[in-house]
Length: 340
Image (tube, rainbow, N blue to C red; front, side, top):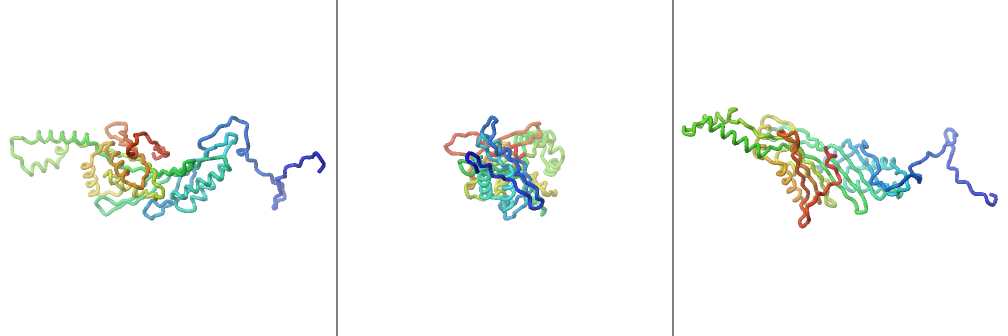
């Protein structure tokens, strides 16, 4: 090479062995330094990726579910136009196919996200949405049926370490205590009209009256209600979702049913009559049982009573009780709307 000449860049072109044609490398525009106004971006990636996942909800039954997956990193380099999105997809496909979901698997996936971006990112996040099918027995009969509980997992890695939140929702029936009291008053008034206070009461007549439509002139209103909850487990605790759902349903007392015969419906009516609750009551019941669970580091619950009296909902929210700490609105990473 003559003095003063510059060596040309290595030619990255090559010839196809099969055809002999010259093959050029595909351009990667996103990896280039750009001259446009730059800025650090909070999250960049993909959402709604369709992938199968396997999940053990705590009963040893590993279910396969169709999930919608989100894969994100921040873009910490304002001089770079974009991230390597395809790498996130391929890593999610590889890791989620390897074994059932758990916290160590998701942490490993997120750290692989960061490695794949070659210094472009400092934080990584993934989200998964799918349904968990649980077999539920009837209240009185020998029948059983399936309930589908929505599951939402949000996991992230940043300078504070790894954090995972697990979300689900429980649907239940809520009978209004105020409406129950007003109904009882109307029944009392009807009884006073139908039975003379000065006349002796015949047991058979009262029993027949109680079984007639006049004996139940008013009924309290009840509605299908939803408890949406997100929890953050302590380090090392398994993602025991079924145990969490069971505790919440037992605290509420009136979860919706699957297979129902007449004896089951009667038992459900009895449970509602013995268990009237405002949304505030329901929120405190769940708060109490989750506070008592030493595997849960933090939680947030939102109760919606979808009233039959009003066209709007009655709502209550609660978080983990923190002794000595001022109450504040601790918003979870999982947006409650994601569970709708």
